[in-house]
Length: 405
Ligand code: PMP
Image (cartoon, rainbow, N blue to C red; front, side, top):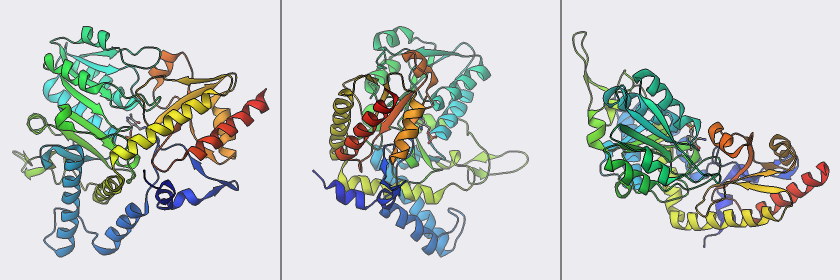
């Protein structure tokens, strides 16, 4: 096993005190903190070779382009994509999903077609599909989950038909941390010729992802949840499929030639990267992947799984505490409620103890409706968290319980 204290020393923000207490950051599902290697890379990019990419013939522009395209290569390897052209830089998961909803929707979805989304999805993986269905007079179908938040595969098989054009599900649910059976979901959809988009926003930082092995059509994630910058994200798409799709945004960098009579679009991946992209952000993802590789995703996953199991066991000792989303297959987060105490109050008091958790619906209102609740308290983890921090969370919750009792 690796040395967690050494890893923590690579995250300067974690050394802070909040209200005089050691910071306990249990909100990495919302965004992860950044290691010094990523922070240094951003600084050195701006101090040594900042220049706009793809456009200049001068040294700095070439250097910046090299770094940006190098990042694409690193991400290609990280996801095990077949070619670099399958990696599109976007501004984040939300942007990637909107890109697919527009480009795939405009090209391949017609009146009467169906799109399936999971019941426990983040709003980012619901609303763009609703908008598409409204535009195209298509129908949105919901892949139901059971009361634990596990997707119901039997019901899923009944929903699939020749009308299904696309299935969109999260690899890992952000509100409850359940790992969905995406391989099975993909294989079943393909039997009907439907395409599958996997929202990997809560997965890539915790689990090894092999898009070629999974055979998914699209896979998306955000930089800021994988130890990199905000404002940058990735869309993986199968090359043959991406080639058939219309571009999402028009502008510079995405064209081969422009005239008032006829504009020709650039080849992949540039066709989907209009305007100056967040090239420093892209490079930060590449650096974050190096940080992850140094530890190894297998080690990361086994350590974080141990943390989740420890958290669930420890919190379950508290009378009146209910874990939302009980499943064997979890990573990244534990959501819970404490009987008779509003999640918001819990979050506010934990904050005063230096403990950062998230409260509310976690942008997953349909999931909360399924559980019959208004929201939860969510503790979400990253590689820098420790069992001692979970003990502090446990102590904090006991204190809150006493106050309210
Ligand atoms: N999907 C999931 C599963 C998420 O957790 C999030 C972020 N909470 C998103 C989509 C949206 O990500 P972003 O805000 O970075 O676009």
